[in-house]
Length: 237
Image 1: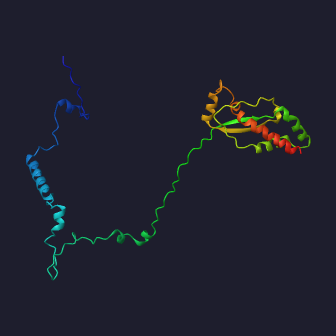
Image 2 (image 1 turned 180 degrees about the vertical axis):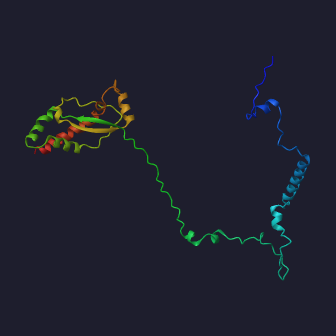
Image 3 (image 1 turned 135 degrees about the vertical axis):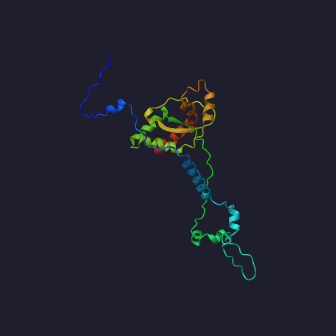
């Protein structure tokens, strides 16, 4: 059984009545006009044709051929006149174009000092050596010390008498005489070339393990003892 709609005595203000009735409102859009579209396309093509620029000549022809509107005046001798756009400026040398102030302020090119390379000096190996006093020299040395002379001055005076030390590539044993007290030893250093020191080591059994001073001091001791004797005699007078 169909349900009956509620009847009202007032006019419906909700708008549901129109939806229920199914009445469609008319559209506000106008129908499409093809004639107007064709007229618009024709106007567009005409405006594009008028806006295209006229073809221009290349840069070289444009500068060579002047416009007809320009009035060229020829000189009386009928010599050809070039347009202003193609007239060349006079060529000037570099000295003419450069300002005189700039040429005068140019600093001269200075040479760099080059020194020859120095040869590396082979100073060798530094070996510390203790020059001893013999037992036979101890007593005369004490007499000099008792006179107020410093034993260090005696040893330095003896060393100054020693000629220049030159180590040779051969082993010389030390003087086989007993040594005096160690406080009177004179310490110095001797530079020996590596190849000479190596040659001396090769001449001694276990020479690489022996003290370096023991390998070379034998070449100095005989001259040293002679200088000590001469110094003691001179100071004992």
